[in-house]
Length: 441
Image (cartoon, rainbow, N blue to C red; front, side):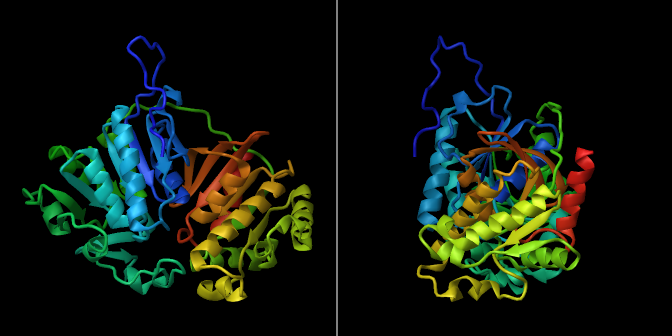
């Protein structure tokens, strides 16, 4: 991995360099965008990049927050930690002083290894960890993570095809990958206003059951001078502009008119049901055939051409349409692997994401499509790669976990809606479509 400061400024260099107030690292792209928008919606100039070796001196001098997708959720713990540590160390050499390690609110990925690497590379002694996201009904109670009122491992995340949750106890999850000292701050202690004792080294896990608790945690960290190295969900990131006293920069926000293309490559049952519900309520939906990723060159497949024709007809008629990798009736764990296609599950899912990205890139050659909405971080990365786009500018939040952004591809500007697989209510597809229609009128 190259250093961020590929062209270090000299004493006589008169360029105006970006004074990045905060660097955020996320392990997947939807998480990176969901976190970045928490600051962008407060008029803090934020940029999300998929380039781990981003050259800070080349960025917009007005940029305040840089969010980096390390794409490390499916890496080994060692590789994930190496990526995070390298980026934090390089950023420090470029003058960045404050860091936020975004973690998945369902604690998927290499959480322990990445927190440890970020802490050590930051030069700080202690890292505050706030994994709750109250607006999305992710709560931390007594050191356990809950989805609504249910323990994490007893929800659908316990059946995740790649990383099923086997426990909800956060210290146990962290101990799998880190030897850092662990301590916690309970809700009772936080809400009492008393002087809360805590270990001043290692990782401190905070309970959180309400938005007000996030504010209390922020005030507590400010008083303890612990704002330089923090971690947690997108929920706590929303508090960072106020805590770090970031200046606002109002920018024009517009939405492109035209039909919406919904793309669901997520295997999470929440997203699968959302698209199925939209189909039952009248949205045209195309279920992609496994033959599209079973062959070396899917563009030579008749199914590819038929899909492009079908989607193109709907878009040219001004109608919204969705494409998906599986229908509601199929079981996420076996639906793709069970097709008899060679390869490990992780490799197969990455191949599917790449092929779906290529298909979406071909679809978007149709100028009738105004907005593309992508469900699932791996799928989003596949789309970005196929479009040769390395950066996203978050604009605003349609709903928790559902973000409107803008990307600049070589031929035109494209509005992109992103959603993590496990977020959103039953009607989120039509919520997105209605938002885009109203915003472009």
